[in-house]
Image 1 (tube, rainbow over the protein chains, first blue to last red):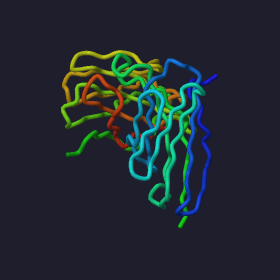
Image 2 (image 1 turned 60 degrees about the vertical axis):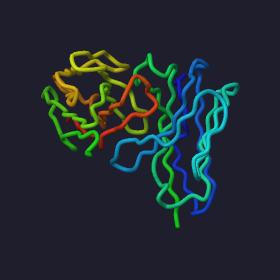
Image 3 (image 1 turned 90 degrees about the horizontal axis):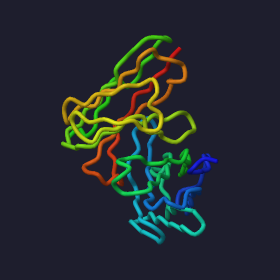
Length: 114
Length: 113
C-alpha cells in the first residue's frame, strides 16, 4: 500500500466551479501537510501548508486536514483557467528531522475551461 | 533573483553513458535536494544535502552520486545510465531545517535509450 494515495484524474471543470482535490494516507504519524501546484514543464511550487488537523484558508484556496480519517483536501473556489495545473499533495512526519523528505501523492491534473 | 537553476532542460543518453545534472541556487539556502518524478507518479527523494560537504541518501539513491563543494551548487551524477533512470529530475532548496517550503527548479527531462 502506497503511503500517500491521490487520484490522478484528469479533472475538467468549467470556470467558476468549486474544485475539490483529495489525498488519503496510511501512516498516522504524518503531521505536516502541503499542497504544491505544478504547471506543465515547471517545478512544483508551494500553495498551502497546514499542521495537524483543521482548516486553512488563503484567498480562493482552502486546505483541510482530517487526521482521524487520514484524509486531506484542497478546495478551490471560483476556479479560473489559470488554475489549470497538476496539484500534488505532500506530507512529512516531522518539520525538521526528515530534512525535506516529503512524501508526495501522484498529483491530480486539473483543467478549468472558460 | 533566479532561484533554483537546472541544466540541461532535456537530454537523451544511451545505456551505459554517464552525465552530470547541474543545479545551482542563488538564495543562500543550506538545504538542497534531488527528486525524480516518473510519469503519473509522485516525486521521490534521491539525495539531499544540509550544507557544503554534507550529503545523505534519500529514498532512491541507487545509480546516482552527488557532491556539495559550495553552498550554491549541488550536481547529480549518473553513472552507467539505465532505462529505469528515464525520468524528470528536480532540484530543490530550502532556507532551513523546516521542510514545508521547498523551492524547485524547472526540471531536467532525461531519456535513457
